[in-house]
Each structure stands twice: as C-alpha cells, then as structure tokens.
Image (cartoon, rainbow over all chains, first blue to last red; front, side, top):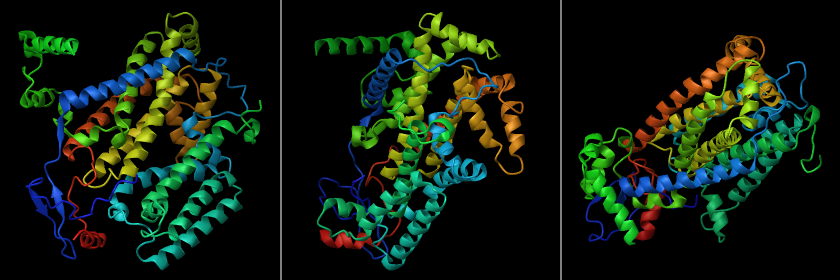
Length: 234
Length: 264
C-alpha cells in the first residue's frame, strides 16, 4: 500500500545500468525514464514450483482444519419449523444485517446491485490513475464536498438507526479528516501516507470496513428475532 | 544437495524418453529455450507467460492470493467429485446420504469437512484477492477487463458456495436458502418470477434441490473454469503481473514535473 508512485521520473540516469531508455514527454515537458530490462525468471520451473508449494501448504492447512473441525449438520429440513434466527451463509450476513434496517428492495436488490456495478466500473474511471491525494488538488471544493457527503451519510444512517454501519463510516471519516489536515510535507510518515490517498482508496476502504463489520455483526452478534446478542454469552 | 541433483537428473532423463516427448512437445534440456517451450507448448501452461518479473515472486507482491484461490478450487473439485458418488439430489434421500457420509462412508466425514472448509476459504480468498489487487492498483489499464472477469469470478464463487449450501438438506441449508432466495422476490416487477425460476416452485423444495445440484456440480464449475482460463490468459496478454514502475504512464500528471525537478 505504501509503494512508491508510478510516475516518479528521472530516477535512473545510469546509462550503463539501463542502456535502453524510452522518454515520455508529458504535459509540462519533463522526461520520464523507463527501465526496460528488468530481472525476470522462467515460469517453469521457478514460478510453477512456488505456486505448487503455496497450494500444498494451503492444502495441508485445510486438511488440518478438516481433521479437527466437523462441518455442521443439523436435523432434516423441515418447512414447518423455522429456526430463530434463520441465517443465510456467512458471506450474505452483511446483506441480511442491512435487511434488518431497510426494505428488501433497497438492502437486497439496490445495494448489492450498485456494489457490483461499482466494482465493475472501477477501472474505467480515471480517478485512481493519477493516484493523487484526494485533498491535494482543488482542495477547498473537495474538502467541502467531503464534509457535506460524510455528514449527510452519517445523518442518513442515524435516522434509520443503522449504528452498525455508522461506526465504520465515522472511523473512515475520521481518518479522512486527518488526511485533510495532513500534507506530503507532514512530519509523520503515516500522515504523509494518508495525504497521498486518492478518492477510490477511501471509497474502497470504507466499503471494506462496512463489509467486515456488517458481516461480523450478522454472524456473531445476532440472535433470536435478529436481536443483539453477545457471542460469548450463550 | 546430491539428492536434489539426483532427482533433477532422473527427471531430465524422464523428459528425454520417447514416450514423454510424444506427450509433451517441449523436448528436453534445461536451457532457457526449453524451459520457455515447456510452458509455451503446453495447452494448460501456455495460458501463462514464459517469464515473470523476479520481484513478483516476493510474497508481499501478491500474497499468493490468486494462486491460493485456484488451489482451493482444485481441492473443491477433488473432494466434490467423490462426494457426488455418495449423493442423490432428491428429498429426503439427500439428507440420508449426508448422514451416511458423516457416519458410514469411510473418510466421508473428512471429505465433507474438507469440501466445506475449502469452500469457506475460497470465498474468503476471492475477497482478499480482490482487495489486494485493488490496493496495489493492479486493475488499471490495460488490465481493466481482467478486473471485470475477476468480479464475474467473485459472483460465480458466491453462487457456487450458495448452491452448495442447500445440498445437505438439513435445517441450516433449508432456511439459509429460504432467507437468501426471498431476497430475489424483492426485485421490482419480476421478483416473484425470478424466485420461481430459481427454486422451480414457490418455496425451497425437491425441485430447488435438483436445480441447485445441477448448477453446483456442473454448470457453475464449467463456467468458473472457463472464466479462470480467461483470467489467467489475460494476465499474460495484459503484460504479466502488475508491478509498480514497470510500464510507461500515458497520463500526464502535475506530479511528474515536481518529482523530476526534485531529482535534477
């Protein structure tokens, strides 16, 4: 995540080390050096060998889990007897948690549909191509939009009592506020890092937070009638 | 050292035999050419490039998440096929078969355990892979469409896991699928039609079990294999695994002059 940016130019001007060089002239006519002869290894055997070892390690780990823990198996399916709560598989429990707050057409159709659409269109927007810090350019307008957007989302979640989704929103918004207050010249490396994060990073991180929190709540903290329960108290 | 050398030489000898050479078109030898041919001349391996950037081998570059996801898929196929031998997709036989797998079939319990935990692992790994690719910025042009294929594979994985969830025909399965399929009813206008098409009825019943079985054991795995093949092939076609600073930036940015100034 903290890898250097792609477009830092002029790093290597050693003609012996990289004899082949291509110059890309950008808008403000500065040259960019591209190292063409990077170290490579043969796919066979080097890469394939590593892949096989990785898969074998995984297989051993999963065999260990399979020997230690049994897959659940309950009584035969009985349409006349509804368990309370009836839960979907764990990866859908984030959705089921949202169904608790919003009508099914919103939580079950609109939100997952929009998430899939958003995931598909990610690479077709240039928002992260430049990978520039969100608040570094056009700062005033962007900071204003961010504060308005974050406030609106928080109020919306508050109105619908979705405290479970509000918490990750506030945490990510908190880091974004820290990013607003940071710059590439900040003394702390963490703040420099935050200042350099683009919009797509923030949206995806917020999505990741929501996904993890909602799924965890749906899996561990929901009991009869979808009421709040603590997993360590049976 | 000497053991490794012996194994290598035995393997090279094997590669030189007439039968081996009739099967694999690459021929013998440990030269760069022959190692490249071993990949390029193999119908499965030719999906991959013959060379990979050295730094992409480091664990931190990919965390091997794509490889591991494929690994879970292989385990799932390997355990799924023997499970099919002991299973009838009918009510109530499905549940009895699952019980038999637990208590009667030798290693049946282990097979089912491994299949189920690997399925959970695969869903988790697919998500992890997606986020890792995103945070590395590896979805950017020219790899946009491979990202889209990845999203399709995420959905296929979820459907695979979801359809498999019903097959034991126990209370857990029945009500999880009931809860999940009810969401489909919420689709505007044609929600009930989709729900009916999915289950082959208005509620989870024997028809739904058969549909989910066919989807789980045949249609979805085949579609998954197809898209996995395209996914791998596109890695090669799009210039190999994404590495920072490996490609020219075609987009002009304001940061370039600033950085260039700093260096000069």
